[in-house]
Image (cartoon, rainbow, N blue to C red; front, side, top):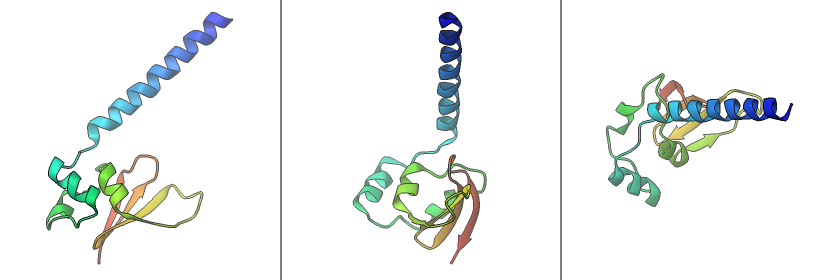
Length: 102
């Protein structure tokens, strides 16, 4: 019985690790200079929004840089305002669903 639980735990943990590694491959990171700019709170250069596309994963730095807009607690989507754009993403994966430009 203990052996069966141990095997189940190992399989479950390996699946979680595989899923995380899979998500990391699709996430594009910002260039080092742009990461420093975002960390300082400076504005992003013109043209950065061209890198935002539906179906892509929103970069974690841009996610933290943006202003989160409140929504329903049980909603699977989240709205993030990044300078002149408002991006609708799936909360758990940060997949871009919609991009609205002001």
